[in-house]
Length: 306
Image: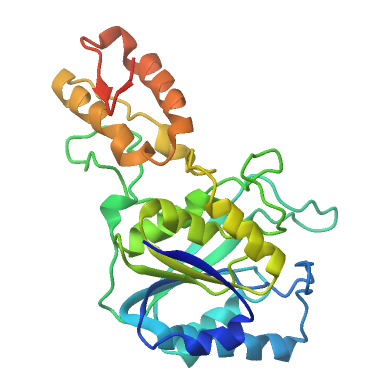
């Protein structure tokens, strides 16, 4: 697999990408809120920002394969305009309006403090890839009619911001959690496919692709962020920096011994293989719920559950 970061203006570089060559686009464009990105400020007049959005999204549609998917992050002020461009102007197919809920955000004293960002998921056609089994979350309760591989995660995703004390925190004002990007890539692509991020920023998309065995290209205007990303790609992998809290939960009512044993053997592979730091919490939860009823010691990938 190849992951590369290219320094330059996406508005220029996008024109160099061949048409219908990209499987998934994950875009976190400037929200036009005046943030400082080192060598540029995120502020345009309203009409200029809409024109900017139409231009890069038009190029994004061109390079996306007919079976491809685009995810676009956006703040509340411009989300409706981005939706209009994608569906009305570009005739892409709406799939989901994802709400990324985070636990901490900007504090306000006049008005309500924001606690979410929006992510628009569109496809180029009605024939697109969606790997539901790759992104399922553990069931809360076991029922015989349930798919024990897990449930659909829904369109409200809870991932914490990458806190400043996190060892993976980069010097970037809008770094996205790796677990959030992991879900998009697993849902909409297979190993070896082409992922593209036109506004790479801290390099989260290309870093996640490196671990999930996808090819990735990121464009970034700021040369300092390009260097940061290259250093990040050279670091050893110790697990993604964030996880959906539901991944660690153990279903209630796993009362049948054989069924429970089979499920617990698979849980880590299904839900935690990219999140080793969460395994201990999972083990503790298994002990709390079923410790007195376990007849064997289960092992998976050399990891003893209890």
